[in-house]
Image 1 (cartoon, rainbow, N blue to C red):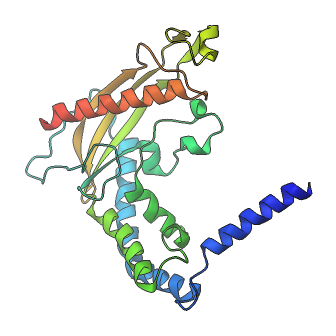
Image 2: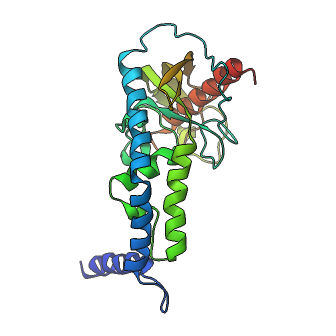
Image 3: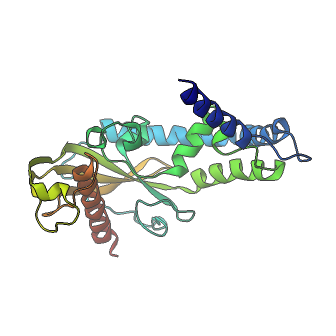
Length: 266
């Protein structure tokens, strides 16, 4: 028991140390104060954009019930740009992909679930929305630490809000039905790393949903596309229960990329 207590105490001291400013530099109160001042200066602007996103969520939930949804068409508006790759964090671009659950703030991220196969829905990395939301929830330490200077504290807060304001379009993944695959048989080869080849069988999972494009600035619905995906024919076994869901999520992402490519002509 003594050893266990010592390990926990050392870890706690290390966490405290990470938040302490270097000797001779600004105090933590000064650093945090600079970040909070930058936050207050941008709060109303950020809350306004979050409110627009809530309106989009209400439209998805209450109004977009047509099946099939009309094809994507942004007309004379600037073209949506997802940066380097659709669905991956980017410092550039005017569009972001996220699930309906992420849009409404009800998503269960796989890292928050003991069994990833049981975590709800499919999520994407969306720091452009998640970080400002945490700031608005009072979690200033999400972007400001004791390693910052007064200047970088301001920059970090402003960068988070700048990215939120740069996102004009959201592509929302809506799930109609999703079921995770299930392993039906494992052979001894599944437990032998030296053996290659088939190690068992599984029932495929499946996903049925759609992607819906919105202009956040006016809440306009700009069409969508159907998304259908299942597990790959063969799936590599890994050491956790979520490998079938990971494969399904990967194929959903590929289906989204293909549907967007068809819709945008890329």
